[in-house]
Length: 440
Ligand code: PLP
Image 1 (cartoon, helix red, strand yellow):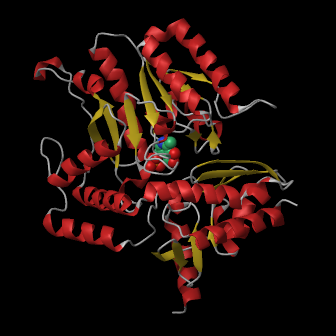
Image 2 (cartoon, rainbow, N blue to C red):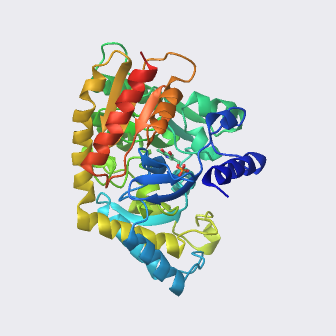
Image 3 (spheres, rainbow, N blue to C red):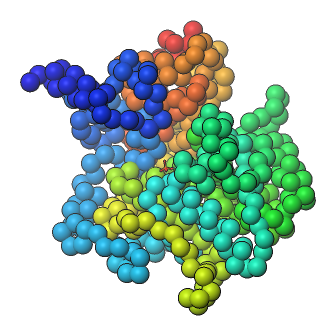
């Protein structure tokens, strides 16, 4: 069978039996479905042998590149020793070591790790923990405070704290009660980010003045509201949230699923603001982009609220079949070790700077409304010239060998942290040309 025939056959079988995430299936068949066959370094290869630079690090996860021998070897060695064993009432060394390593890189003050699988499942756990901890301290705090344009995943608790209308509005009747303030990353004309931070903090304070004693947690994505369109805010916002949480006795819950493990040029985005949250959610890049593993890191105050006798009912009755799967932990350990060895986080900061410089000509282009970037996390907001402008830009980029994804009219660049300078230049060159072709 020729490669062409193989691809056509796979696409037909996909259309016959698969339902893809975040995909409108009435349009997908006409969108030239791409069948990915293999990956190497920062490149993906389709079943016709064409090569694509992975400009969104396979949805914000790839750290060193694909098929990293050290990570693959660690998974294989672990599989030969212990493939899986439940973490409910049992433990294993890869899980213990992964918790230790996460705490080693996390801000001081976070002392315990609760594992989950995807970002959503960790966010969901953290949301329940914040409420249960408050309840077990004898407080009645059934409310959460969160920001418009936030995104924490697709499970119902996470959706409750989301603020992206397109994704979340449908489910409103099903959700837990929350109070939402404006996005710190959506500026009024002429407003700067520090002023916006102050304004949203004032809004938060007003909410907390009204019912702060009923709020168990303030939930934020630190520095970048990623799925909301790479909306960036001033670090002073996070310092203000920390102060408000302390004043009103609410937990500060930060979702570092998109930002954590190096993407902003620090291990965690909260470091840019010098704040330590009470609960920190991490996912995506933990395993280097190979296997799903996420976690909630908490401080003693949260953890201690769950201690008690069997009869106290204080147990966190929550967990998943594959919690802390040893293969995922082995991948995480190999990834984190490589990141230390290679200075990947410092390199990510340098990649970010190079990206910023390379994008300067595009920022001056009429067809671009704004470029927002923190570290390697970049959103290029293009002027709309049709219903799917962002999508069209990505389609043209793909024809020219680069995979990027839009969030509406924002073209997202999120290169693997280990991308080479020449590959980064290729990424920017192709995206720049695609935007100029589509948005004239
Ligand atoms: N939280 C944030 C900030 C995210 O960006 C995402 C996904 O992009 C999630 C949570 C959900 O993670 P997952 O898709 O792994 O469930």
